[in-house]
Structures are given as structure tokens and as C-alpha cells.
Image 1 (cartoon, protein in one colour):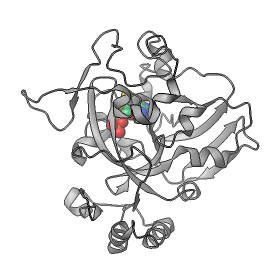
Image 2 (image 1 turned 180 degrees about the vertical axis):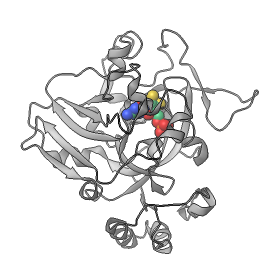
Image 3 (image 1 turned 90 degrees about the horizontal axis):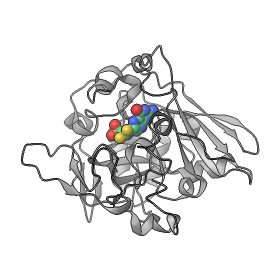
Image 4 (image 1 turned 135 degrees about the vertical axis):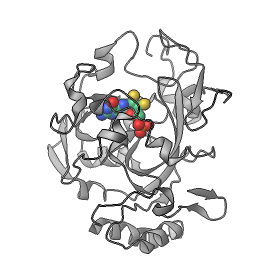
Length: 328
Ligand code: MTE
């Protein structure tokens, strides 16, 4: 995919991106999305791509260019092959190549997400209903992993706030917890005790309501591949990558701050907030710089890590007065 100032996003045909056979059945909501996009001048290219790919095997997911402040990094995109070949998804193993190798059989249809806890009325939503809740948008975010690498990825989805509003949380809801799939039959990594399954993450309510916090269904113009968290995941660009939970099955509204999987595993290393911060080192390594995936090679220069991963102007106010060394 390329970005042209005057033409918006132009996706390469998926056959150019990868020669793999696409086996998904085209579903009605793809057509709905294409029609919605066609109704907007911004979506002209997305709609053209979607309509051009009426083949039954399409995984295309058209999206309008987002107008959310900070949603469009002009940095060079990480090649798609790198973003879906070098992954952390411990349910499929701890090696970076494990998810791409072992997650391909992940069953994402049918998929239901339950909305629970401090809400007016708990309920579950089918993926097909959920994905239509708000107009699909494309956003180019940096993802900075706590391990010291980063990527630039064109995500497809919309602000998590849309779902939170639809869930109708009660006044007691102060935190939002994300529970992800833990199915031993599909996920060989669950045999290892490396984390307490299911993988759980959480945000403070005001963080979750921030427009940059994104519920993601696709990347690079297509539905998410399994190894990147199909069929839906978070992208919280100002926090370390582990906050961006993959393959979400439940969203729970809570009065108290819950413990996250990584906090339980190593509380002195991974805090609840986990905001990207070059001035607060991990106990075992510096967080001052990062390696950009896809720019490998012995002499590739490391980049300086930015406060809040470069999103300080947008999210800094959420943490006014908070001691970021204490609340890491
Ligand atoms: N979600 C689940 N369910 N399981 C995981 O192991 N790893 C996290 C996060 N979400 C993880 C997860 C970590 S450590 C990172 S850096 C990102 O996913 C990686 O996302 P990516 O593979 O799409 O780059």
C-alpha cells in the first residue's frame, strides 16, 4: 500500500502482496462496507478496491481514511510480510515465527464477543454485527513493543469508544478489561505456563474512550491474519504493544482496576499503564531506543523512542499529575 497526498490510500492488489491462496468466503458485510465507502468521496479508492475484488475468495476490507488526530503517521510502512511474520502471540508459542506457522487454523467464524460487568444489560454480539457498528477506517499507527522493536502498520477498524457507548456502561464502570481466546484445542502455547491464561489486558475508562484507542479488524487492506489477532484486537498506539490484546472474546466493565496477564507474570517489570516512555527503563534493558522491524541488518540504525510513542500531543493530558516512574 502506498500513500499519495492527493489520492489517499492506494492498496496493491492482494495478489501482489502475497501469493497465498485466499480461502475465506466473501460475506455480506463486505459489500455493505464497500457501498458505505462508495457514498463518501474519501472512500473512492477503498470502494474501487472492494468492488474490484468481488471474487468469492476476497478478504478485502475497505476503509475510509481516518480523520482522528494523530491517526496518520507519514513514516514508511513496515512491509506486510514482516508485520505478519514476526509476532508475539504466546498462545501459539513464544518464538517470533510460531504464530505465523501455528495460527493458520484458528477458527474465526462464528465468533462472538460478550459485553459484561458494569453495563446496563450484558449481551453478546456476533462479529458480523460488531464490525458494522461504526464506519471502517484506516489508520497508520506505530506499534512499539516493550522488547525494543517497532513497526508501522495500516490498521483497519474504528475507535473503541463506539463499542463502549453501545455497551452502555453504568456509572460504576471505571476500567475496561479485554479477555482473549484461550482454546487449548487450537492454541498449542497454552500448554506452557509462561502466562496465566486467558491473556487479559485492561485500560482505564478514559484511556479506552480516547479516540486513538482502536478496535482493529484488519490490516493492509484485508481482514486480520490469525497471527495478528484475528478476528479482532486492540491497537493502543501510545502504550507498549502487549496492551493491544489479540483475538478478543469478552469486554468487561469493572469498578476496580484488574490485574493484567503481564502484571501477574512479572509485576516489577510490567505495570498496568505501560505507556511508552524512553525515560523509564525496563529493569533489564533501556527503553530509550528501538529497532524498526524490516530494517534489519548489522548496521541498521536504532531509532530514538518517543514519549508516548509519539502521541504525546494527543494523550499527554490523560496522565497530568501522574508519576510515570511509579505508575509505569
Ligand atoms: N495478545 C494475546 N492474546 N497474546 C499475546 O501473546 N502479545 C502482545 C500483543 N497482544 C499478545 C497479545 C504483544 S507482547 C505484542 S508486542 C503485540 O500483541 C504484537 O502484535 P503484532 O504481532 O500484531 O505485532
